[in-house]
Length: 276
Ligand code: SAH
Image 1 (cartoon, helix red, strand yellow):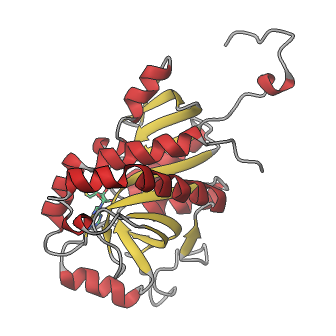
Image 2: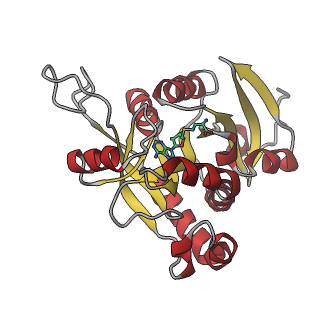
């Protein structure tokens, strides 16, 4: 790295640590990588079979990567972001199954708390508790979650009518209502939930769950252990019932990227390093 000119202001001499931005699947990143390339040089480092792209997006220094699917994949990737890339915080963007009664396909859920619904070391530990950590729920960083939710609200206010027109065949509810932004509990497990019985069982056990996916709570656990702030935003691609796999596939192909692009653009443009 070249030395900074001696007249540089003290602000310029403090290097900004990057933000880690992750998704499980390519489609969930939207236009993030092309926006990074359009903004300047991108360095790509392959580590543990994943590509980490280092550059600036919408003014924010970022390391962007794909975790692939599941809790182990997500935990390993987040650990690399923390240790090999020194990220100051982590944001995950992707799709999820809707679980909460008012959560519809096309809505967005910002995780305030995350839990691993398939963790069960009973009778040694209470259901869902992570052994030896004495907790089952991990909090997202409040300021990050707040900023993500604000970006989602702006995205829907500004692009919602166009979304409803473009995607109303895939999202019939959008004929009459704009997508909603929900905040609360996101649950994760190594399972694609795709039956009324399975989603019903999750609702009975965890009545406050809004969405189910396969990575978020693993990321939140690792971030908790290393004191790294994190947040998770999920667009609802299906309702975790018998229609889940067709709904998920068509949503992923056509719509997921539009949401991620619109949400991340607004979030990153307003992103400031966390004061702590
Ligand atoms: N690679 C495969 C499998 C994706 S698994 C494919 O492309 O078809 C589903 C992904 O979407 C996971 O990353 C998970 O976090 C999220 N997801 C969406 N709907 C889900 C549901 N109903 N249950 C669990 N995860 C879901």
